[in-house]
Structures are given as C-alpha cells and as structure tokens.
Amino acid sequence: MSLLEHRTRLRLPPSTSGALMAVASMSTIQLGLALSVPLVDQLGALGTTGLRLAWAGVLLLVLVRPRLRDFTGRDLWACTMLGSVSAGMMVFFMLAATRLPLGTASALEFLGPLAVSLYGPGRGRKRWTAMAALGVVALTEPWHGGINPAGAGFALAAAACWAAYILLTQHVGDSVTGLNGLAISMPVAGLIGLLAAAPSDLVHVTWKLLGAMLGLAALSAVLPFILEFLALRRLTTSAFGTLMSLEPAIALFAGLLVLGQIPGLAPAAGVALVVIAGIGSTRTGARPTPASPGTHNPLTSPTVSASTN
Image (cartoon, rainbow, N blue to C red; front, side):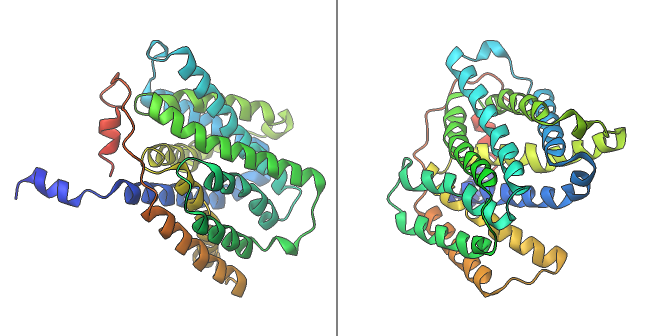
C-alpha cells in the first residue's frame, strides 16, 4: 500500500475531525482558565481578558502576516465584526461572572449556541439540542444562586455574542483564505479588550506578568480560536452549537482530575446527557465542502489547514 493510500484510509470524516477540533478547543480554554486564576487576582478579570486578547492578536499577526490587499471591503467588515463579537463574548462573560454564580452565568451564556442549534443552518437535530440543554442545566445547577439583573444582562449579551461568533466564524472561514481572517479579527478583539480593561486593571502589569499572559494567550486564545475556525469548516453551525454544551462537562472533569472536586448526581447526569448529545449531533453534523476562496499564501491555504484532519 502506498503512503498516499495509507494516509487516505486514515483520514477522518469531516464531522469527526471537526468535533475533535472543537473538543480540543474547549479543553485548552478550560486549562487556560484554570491557569489564569492567580493572574486575575493581580490584574482583575477585565485586565486579564484584555491582555490575553491583545497578545493573541499580536501572535496571529506575526504568524500569519495577512495582506490587506487580499481582502475585499466586505471581507474586512466581516473580520472586524468577528473581532468585535469575540471580544464581547469574553468581556461580557467576565462581567457576568463577577455578579452571578458561575453556573448561572454559564447556563445563561449557553442560550447563544443553543439558539444557533435550534434555528441555524442544518437544523433537524432538535432532540440533540434539547438533550444538550437539559444536560447544561443539570451541570451548572443555576437554581443554587440568585439572579442579579445586571449580571443576567451581561450573561445574555455574552450569549448573543457567542451566537454571532459561531455564524461569523463560519462565514469568514468560508470567504477568506486560510487563517487570514482570524489574523485580522483577533487584533480587533485585542484592541476592544484593552479598551474595556480599566486603567486600574493594567497599572500592576510587570514584565513577568506580560510573559505569563503571552503563554496563556497562545494556549487559551490563539489555539482555541484556530481550532474552532477550522472546525466550523467541517461542521454545520447547528452541530457546532450543540457540541459547545460539552464545555461545562470538560470543566467538571478538569475540576475532578486537577482539583479533586467530586460532582454530585445532577452534574454527573448532565455530563452523560451532553456527551450523548454531542455524539449524536456530530454523526449528522458534517457540512458539504464549501467552495474554497482563492489561494493567496500556501502556508495558510485551506488545503494546508485541511491536512490537520
């Protein structure tokens, strides 16, 4: 058997590779959040978020080196909007998490991908969406905390940004070659994140903290955004939105393995529900192959990116 034939046999279906990318993205995000806890105490939630996004924008600009002449005006506008909702998704959730129990904030934020699963392109798997929603409620147990009106508003704003992020990421991924779109959107997100961070949040920044934030940006911003960018080339937005329900389950497993936090009966049942829903949505969630945009840079072309399968 030739090497090419062997590689072809080993190639995963698009729905499977897309799901694995999404799960890897969520895992790195949760690991990054765990490692960010000491930095939040020093920089504040918004300071930590702003610096992480800013470093992510710088890293992608350096690695991808997008050329503005390769973009149409419509593409640049879409990338700018993607950067704006990416920043809003993270900033609004941080503002919600400082006012609400984390489970309540997470449950409200999940309304964004839930709406995409129900009403986005490729719908028809509502049973998986409903199962995922029940699982997230069981996982986060929002009934354990009260509702702060401002916190609820911020969480719902984060949900709206998350829904827009899913749709815009797929649109930009289909329209712009390789990772060029992400390399434009992330600096926009970084600028907005820095503007959202109060000067008091950044006054304690040291070179050591800047170095730590650079590592966290690579782990919990650059890598997850790239993985989700590629995953949405392989999955429908409905399947991707349902898969996002796995994130609270991944956080629960991280707490169990790293912190020794043993889940109760309801969260354990929630894990089972979202895992089943994730598997079910993935089996029917492959996208038709989108038309590839023009090739501008062989290092960032969809052909090279697809080799990550």
